Image 1 (cartoon, rainbow, N blue to C red):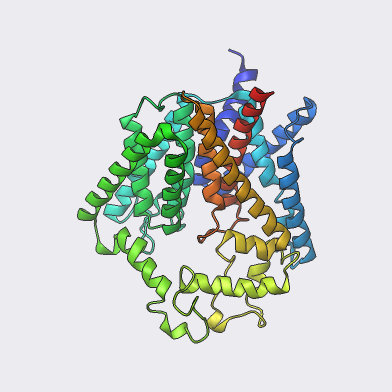
Image 2: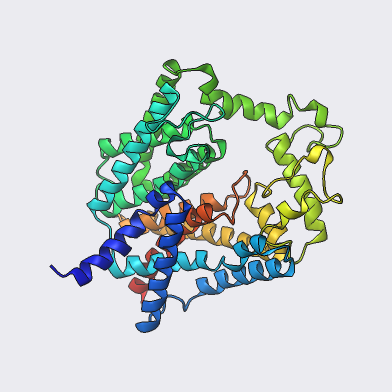
Length: 434
């Protein structure tokens, strides 16, 4: 047994695959692994003179980082606020490091599928246990009538699972467990249960992005339409059954997903604030009264910092300034709760243009890859995997929805995780052409 070969595969290859587990454990462990991975990547790239950093993607991410760094240093409030922008370069390098590891070890095997399966089964059981008993397996109680599983008081369970489903699907396809001819009922039920948990979590953004992801897959990959249809049917059935045996009316996700959303958009219950916060067309709020406040306040800041922005944490620093503050401190938060508005306010017009370019590039690649799949008679798992990854990136870049803090380390890793995989599959396609 050659330990010199096995150890790198174990720590790097399987480490890449279990990054979601590291994120579940906490930000510190995942951050340590990220730094370790980047150092290994840079060492071997320089030593072996590899060309992972000689491409248009590095130029694009480099420009985005420069805009982030410049806006942060230009608005240097204090080092604690600035360090997120100064050290942001490690996040794009994380994506290139993933490409490097996948290219070096090509770890798509059933062991990884087993790891994902166990992880999902544990989260599914824990979430359902919390939903019905009021607390999960380790004693974390329900927060604000929403289940959170092992995330305790952080209500990110739905977002976490939504961004993991593409990778589970990717490994199922790459290991030939699922293809055009096979609909594996076992994994169909598991994915359906994951969708159920996302629904029960009450995270409306995540639930919408889940629907958007499966819609893209359904219309882009003809080979998987039966599989996606089966998941949808089983998920709806499970959701209906769950409503009849739920623990409490307060935990009814239907009320939160639909009734509460409608009430927040029309401003029902927020009439007292309407004299200082105008509705859109005098009829509706953008998503909710609170989100409308974030965007209104951000627009005032953007007008004063349109070119270079306010820096990574400029919004949270300036939002209580008397020249921007809204009545009753409405709108002030750690970030504006929309990726595009946040980047516009932090990086200025340059950052906004770059992320819009990224969105249209991904959209174009989805269309191009879809055409390629439709022209092929056989099931091409490389192309199918590419479009799954593109769809995963697409939902992260979708502009018309509330979002988390783009510069948050935890969320940034989830955003750039599929980009690393995409760079690997893109490289495979380019090698075939050459």
